[in-house]
Picture 1: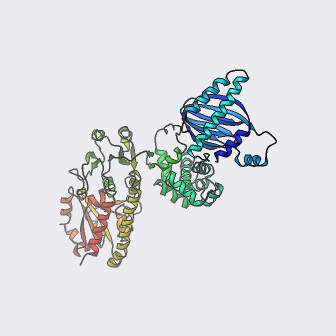
Picture 2: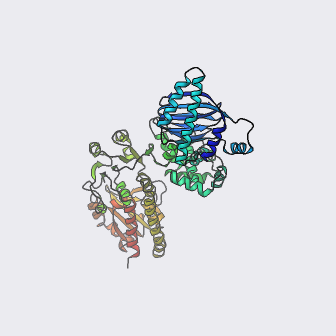
Picture 3: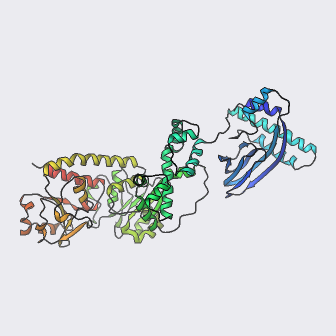
Length: 578
């Protein structure tokens, strides 16, 4: 904006002030819309609200002035502080005849139809002019009207002077807000970075830079989050199939949509729908947004989906209480410490030995099945993470602190990603997973070469019987899926994670290699079994293919540190053997 050109035209026009008003709007005003019958100037004395001019958004507050031409649709909404503002309606015409240069300058500049807004640097002189204009406008007689016109000229001179001093351009429509608004309304259409750039007269690179500066991500990533939000609404409010929902939010390929949904939320669409159905209570009433970017910014906050719904983490939790001992492993793998944890029911004497070097001051909170709620209250955590084991206590837990309920037997990799989202350590979680993936990829071919298809199984003496962990067990998946080992026929089961067999039935397992899982509670029983004739008759025993393992690491503490130790032990047994 060349202020000098505006001043030239203001000095030449014939001016008529049509109306002067001072308006007050209370908090909570959601819509105050009108179409301007003439050019208008609006000045905010106090308060805060969202003002739009033909959809272009201005966040108005004390000392904000904006200008618009005839027929502009003006809306004032989202009043978050009591709003007081002046509005001046006027008509400016250029007397004829006039030079061609002036006409061309008017066509180029359009000072009386231009839309702009800015925060003034000196409010006092403007308030004096506006207050006097309001007083004179209420008077009758030609002198009062002339005074109003004189004061309006002085007001314009002051505004132009401040714009010139600040070297301001007219506040052009905020591109990020406009693109966000467009995507909110057209998310189901085919949208690319190039189409957005063309629509908003920008280059893709410039738009990417502006989005990254304001929101920390590009426009297409933001579009994906809009679509995920819309999909979540449909999953909660309809019984539509996945294919229909995918198409409704702009994705033809529902398989791609499912992968995208999991990537952004941490769970599959079906699990999200199930979690929302299980969630109790109504959503809290949403407050009016203070900032026009409130909704985009909220999308960037950590929304954690769990078995009882979803929770928005406004800030990084510093004191986390975990009600499953395996979660200590996940937190430590990401370099964080739990403030408190329950103990392993099979070993109530202490926290896991394999984590001793990493744990600091962690407060005991009872056991997984019987958490100590008084100890939990005294801990005053920022966040509680539990599993469905504590579902009967969920309401009590939420009275103590915000609570996330995770599925206990979920794949440890997905749980780690969830912890990464909770603690703001998504990148660290992916690094842990990449390290593990690299490790097992290297071992898989080595183990295949070494074992030549020999079978491997894991058993656990327990309660006067022997538990055979099947291929459906979460740790057995480390052996059979991650490392490519072969289970014996009796250990192949797609539904049950284990089966109980007697000592006499053990020869039927007929595995080439046994990992025997024990703990202090059942060690005596395990030792006794291994003295029996039946045990000694096993082919694997005779060939010394039996290996002792700690059930706490292999079973109880199902996290990245423990699972890496399982992999390391398997590698040591088979690859380091002479």
